[in-house]
Image 1 (cartoon, rainbow, N blue to C red):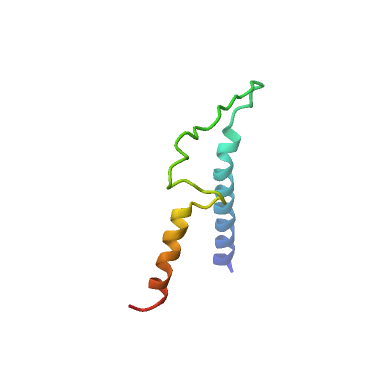
Image 2: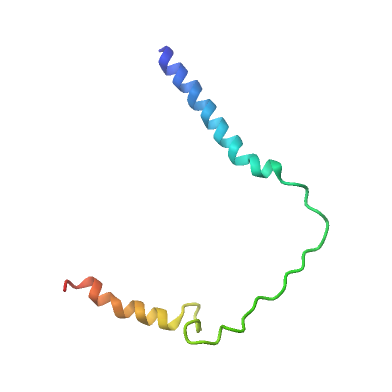
Length: 77
């Protein structure tokens, strides 16, 4: 019975240390300043090549290459 109690207390202490350790970065964060952060537009000048052309959000050539490899992965060679 004593071993079980010691294990429970040790487990609770370790769990508490884990919670406090994971909360440490949030506790250490400084107050947010009232300054306005200005974010520049992303650089999209290189998005017109064939490897990044994605009209539906999926790169077309990557999708074609993936679908081309499916039969070889499904069927034994």
